[in-house]
Length: 135
Image 1 (cartoon, one colour):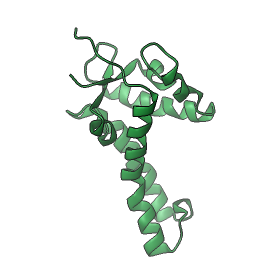
Image 2 (cartoon, rainbow, N blue to C red; image 1 turned 135 degrees about the horizontal axis):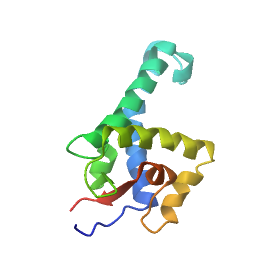
Image 3 (cartoon, one colour; image 1 turned 90 degrees about the vertical axis):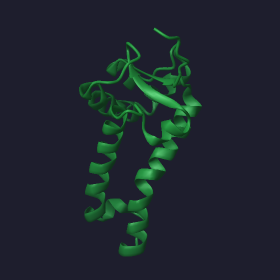
């Protein structure tokens, strides 16, 4: 097993910002240009597909050969399981929904990334995953 360098809080936050912009911006632009609002929650024709596509994106991308979302690819990161190999579909789903717990806990699960030895958030611990720099 190779020694992997675990990705810290700030680089992971940066990758999340990129991912959020990639997924959110097309829907926001449609809301502004077509529906003349900046609140996509007020437009079910946009909000329901947005929730579906963003969920699919954050679950499916770690299962690809990239093992990462596009934001993580930009920073040279990948998401691995506890053996530093590709996630199972169950882990990808569990990891995504475990992030919701971190939101409910006022982001404490994300702050853990900066405080733990292997830079794991609550969702990583629950899904038994790591975010590491690619070889």
